[in-house]
Length: 130
Image 1: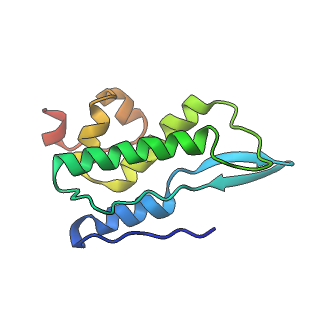
Image 2: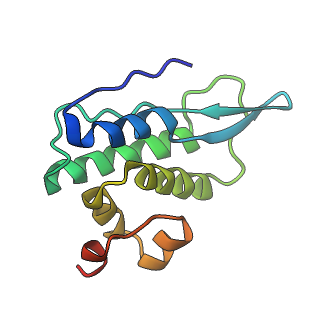
């Protein structure tokens, strides 16, 4: 598997690298073997310290989770049995790995605090209060 990361600056680099390298692990089966499907999510052109940049990054994460858990342009792989659960898990894993309050805030715009907690997402107090 080849994954390329885009570096944008010292602050969000670590989170972006983690997201790009480790996320969207959608397990799929091909002839009785299990594979992990990864999708590169670029932070190129985004300032993740700004709300607009974090929202765009979250939009990209959502798109990647959808691709990985649905069609994914995979050949000879059986589709995941529960695409919605795969999508929610992949998206939550991405948000959790990013460790970025503004990305977590974007996640919480469409998910509850209980959903975030159930998926292991740490919600900073300042984000939870909003």
